[in-house]
Image (tube, rainbow, N blue to C red; front, side):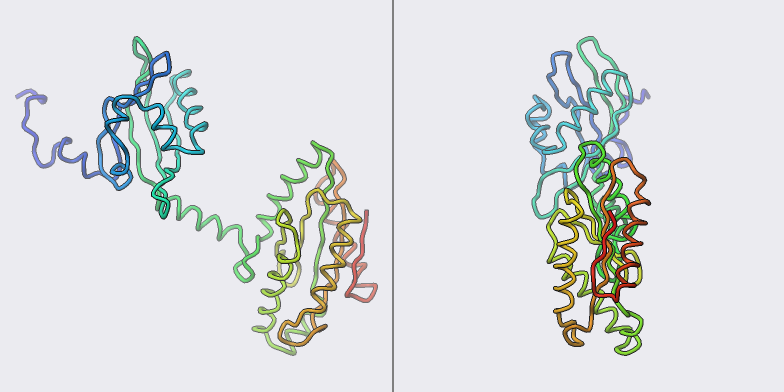
Length: 299
């Protein structure tokens, strides 16, 4: 019996497709830009939310609605695939339902037709996968005690800002913070109280900074603050304001028990980042040599 004449069995593709956690589709785009899905079948929660009849007739407007802010990226991927006959591989975020938006991965192979291009492929709901990726990324980028960005996240951010500073000639400064006599504090009050001081310091520093600034924990009792669009003298003033605020804050062990030594430095356009960091570190050392609880700067 020819395959096409076989009666569908419980294990045939026609019966299996509605139960797979994704969508099998055929997508067509004409040379004039008209788009539609001649075939679109599958299962999953996301597909149930889509107006399939409209996608079958004219998909252009609905694709724009479904892909939201990812629409330019999706159209660029389609254009690249059509132009070079390369596999279409991308992902986008469905902007609904609002309480739990879905992430969709697309994989399809193109083939030319007389009047356009046709793709045969699959769309899979990868919402759980993306959530896990985001969780792991946060773990990689976050200090577990304070919730601040860690050294890795800081250096990625600082590298980006240095590139912008070099390109546009805008100022960029950093502060190196160190809690004075932190070992003695730990010895006197215990490590749990020491951890509490680190957590409160992280929170207080964030409250005192601008939204565009970043504070990160480098390790131990040492932190760095990155201040874009900030020249050295302004950074020095902000550092002194922060120092005063921390010294007057009661961390549960009395005002004035926690103080900061701070070193500040400004980026010189085009220099290696390590040079600026070394200057800030030298300034921090100078602040400690000057008696602690003060701010020192190196241009």
